[in-house]
Length: 273
Image (tube, rainbow, N blue to C red; front, side):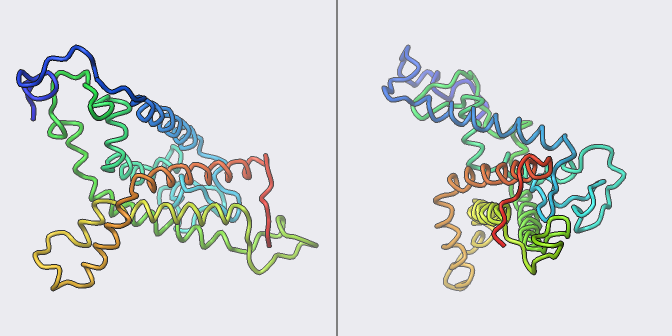
């Protein structure tokens, strides 16, 4: 509620000078979130604006997928309708997965506590004098999260397609032996992309919005057994939504970094067959 009469400084609350009476290291969790999340934001921003070293056949960085701008040869599997775009191709599509994460219920709690200290932890007073929740601009925009979820599903399908393409035979210049390509490619990058897409789907399907889509607005579950089973399954995934959020955050950065190192020639792909 948008009033200064509600919160830890309201007249009805006990007057305690200390910020908190907690004796544990409550500050470790928000500090860790602040450091890790800030590092990811800086890394992702730099990579998004680089506009290069995002494709090392057959691997395409998830930051640039689908590559719809003026992309390097082999990186565009859906054409280049935005070839006229003057900036990095990543900036065309990153708004969708980024919007999904930034409006995510779990991430809201994480960065509200770590960056805005609202509040920094349970039982710890926040420094703000007023509280308006998500009823005013810009936080009212958090309510579009469900629509970003639909976009995230499409992004997940595209990344799944990229993972399948990671099994493509290598070009002749990367082939084993005397210029002959193998029938299928399997490398460390392939395994990283598989792990990444698994975490991406676990994060996407464990979303609160997904839970509402499959089982919301129903009066009688008994009349909708299929949707009830889906709702039950998503609810179980939802219990670990925060874990999948972090795992997928790390996995997408690791895959991009691996592809960057391949594209720059810093390392060679570890080939299995």
